[in-house]
Length: 379
Image 1 (tube, rainbow, N blue to C red):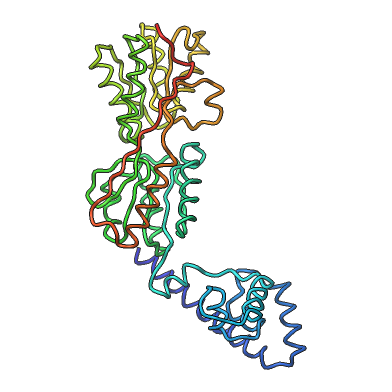
Image 2: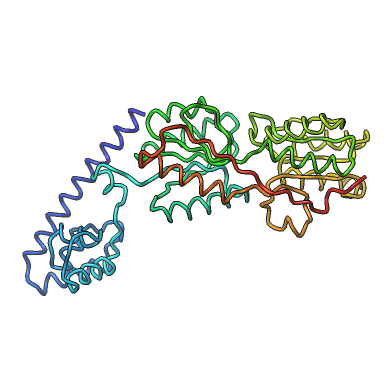
């Protein structure tokens, strides 16, 4: 990290030197004739990339001081209507983009929060990302996001958190189940952290999470009520997906307590892992396969179809998440996780932490709704 920060400092110095040269050039432009200044402004409108336009450019084009332009664009202070309109029009014409993070750091505060998200190609994480963005915008927070794919040991995710910290974010939202509390805790020394979706036991990490044990119990109770007495539970291991692991354990325990025979399969992160073992159990007499995610449910259904078995005629199958596009058309028996509630609570908690309004560790659990589709039937 020391080497990285040194590089950033060097970059800042270079940027300051470049800015000084540009400022000098603008002062020189201001000393030319009005016609020449107008021509230079026109040239900048066409040729200057938007991200290189400074507040000094806007001030010069509007004929005001840099401080006046800054206050006007931030909505601070009082100005004659024509002055403020002239500044706004100059900013729009030049394509001025305010460097929000730099301005916040200069003011000694920041409203920018880092978000680390599991691969957004997964519909459940994609929807969570969208809702987090909506909630953050509504509450005046900016999110800087990095996404991570398969990373069972969490090394990529730790590196991503270091990158976010290098951007001087005010807090971290972690929306992935693949990083441990031990890996997260060092970051909690520097900024508040809220896990979105996964439960956490570490004392300094806050959560707005799905009640995965409750989800497992709801699904298992439904399958048990359909009369199934021999069931396969297919879930990710604790290392591959902790939420899936919690769901799977709750399914198993609920079924066993009801006198149902259970074959428990702990698989890796890929949806097709463990499917062949599940089919072996079906051939041995199991009448239902309970999957800890809808992706696994689809993988099992494909394998059953390839083996000449029908769902639910020969075998009942269930999943969990309820976010897959077309899940209703496929008639998936699943549980719809409360993404919207978790996203709203996550951003609300982060805002409270940034405002200093949370004295104790926040733990908020949300339970979804059972979707009794057509892939599970009575025996």
